[in-house]
Amino acid sequence: MEKQATAILELLGNSYPSAIKSPFITEQTGYNGAIIRKTINFLRSLGYPICSSRSGYYLSQDKEEIKKTIHNLESRQETIQRAVEGLKLSLKDREMEVYEVR
Image (cartoon, rainbow, N blue to C red; front, side):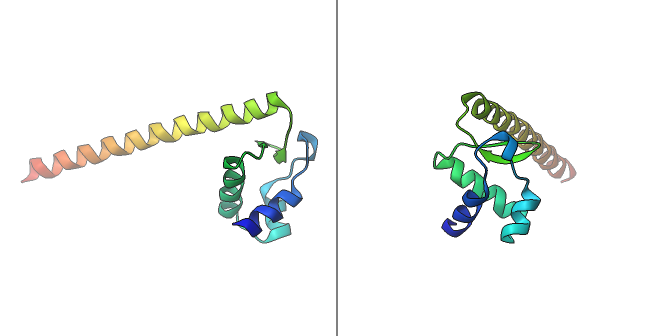
């Protein structure tokens, strides 16, 4: 992971205007989207202020940009949690069907 982290950090710009998209990172490193996302999240967990937008990924020292990225990540987390809960409900429904058939 250290090799991937270093390669991605070297590509990231220091502001929104210098944001880079995942396909560019893939082109430069050969890493697929899943590896890029995993590495970006790893770097964020270490405290690197990597922001993201429709323009791509970038390092930021701007508190508002960082807060916006945090908000976007939290919104996705909530959406994913609702999906997990829905899938759990579908499992319960299927368990009930198994019991009813017997």
